[in-house]
Figure 1 (cartoon, rainbow, N blue to C red):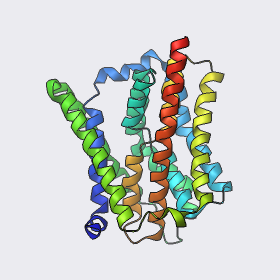
Figure 2 (cartoon, rainbow, N blue to C red):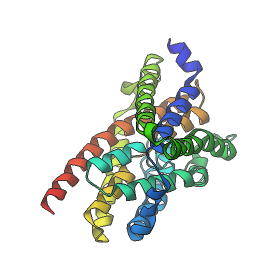
Figure 3 (tube, one colour):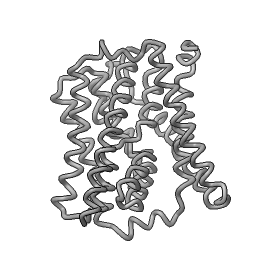
Figure 4 (cartoon, helix red, strand yellow):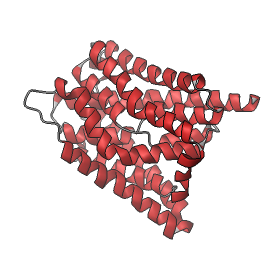
Length: 293
């Protein structure tokens, strides 16, 4: 069973991302992008935080944390990827500006075709083996095939088969979650997830990185006096990353057997667990604020 997973790990990650993006796309319509027009200031702040501040935070951790190389690469992947479907769900639960959340997610998802290879090259090229060449073309191709096309297909379903869109969205998202569980079980059973050997310092690095993103995402909207609902959307967009895409890129960059790949995978999965906990905290925090406003 576990040998089968190892032999097909890349396709597990590809299927998981494609289904998640199909599910997200089936909830979107072109009208959702009107958030850019309705809240241009909040949208600009959210985009700047996503594209500039998050990579800067990752750069500081990569430069000064002293964590294992695999962890640093994992942080770079997290910084290079956009938010995902979970951020939109969490924003809805937090009573945040869901239109703003969807707009930021959609635009950064489309933009990551260009931005992800650039950010990865800037952050981790110096930490890779001397003979390693960043596969920019392959990364862009995989983002297009497994992320943008399923997203567009889901939107087409929502436009042409709106009566079935909700069911297809749930199917895609639930299947995506199921495959994540298979990835965790397969990785653990194959010995790729060894928490005891991962190291306490590396775990703390991931935790502090997540808390740094959370803190900045809360402080910046407050300093700029953005409305509470806009702030909630931005907080969750910055903290909750699209780890689905990170899993695919890891499987692509580091095939089974590569020692770095296991550490990167552990970093992505640990951050995923931490972000869910922090996301739950943001939901509670913003719902309480909403009651008092």
